[in-house]
Length: 182
Ligand SMILES: Nc1ncnc2c1ncn2[C@@H]1O[C@H](COP(=O)(O)OP(=O)(O)OP(=O)(O)O)[C@@H](O)[C@H]1O
Image (cartoon, rainbow, N blue to C red):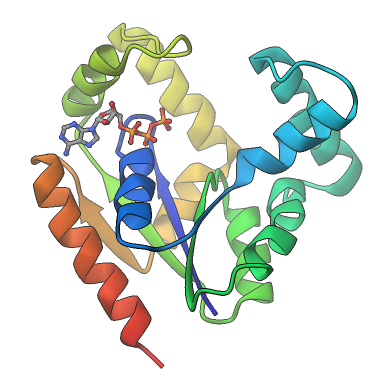
């Protein structure tokens, strides 16, 4: 089984890559679902606060790669030869996936600061903070969690400063190559 992970700064287009993969028949395992399930099992509503606290608790208890480890059964239960995993935040998680799946492929996705800022402002999700200073803080926070080191390890980099269709062309080509490679 070839497992593909995607890493990138906030607003770089990771969610869009997952959507394109699904559209092309590739199953996507969302790492956050492992946290969401535990919150629900504990009888709590899956609010941002509860999800954040549960992530912190799991990491303290099991180590920094907790969420990656908890996501492995969901990945292994897929019958497809290529599976995309959504939600990698740090190098420790990359290491865990590489150990478990020797053919693991890490894709870095890049878009300029201005592009990301404009797209996040447009996305307007409740946790999106479109002010430049806020995005800078969010970048710093994620880089501090090991995202920078994960990005350095990427096997391939996708540039996402163009249109969604430009992105889809690159992703489809990559998925095709990943599926072909022995
Ligand atoms: N090439 C593109 N052209 C236009 N809009 C795009 C493009 N790529 C992504 N977007 C849009 O930009 C916004 C941010 O992208 P997305 O949600 O995929 O980023 P992300 O990396 O998952 O961000 P986060 O880490 O904050 O969840 C979304 O609304 C998405 O639809």
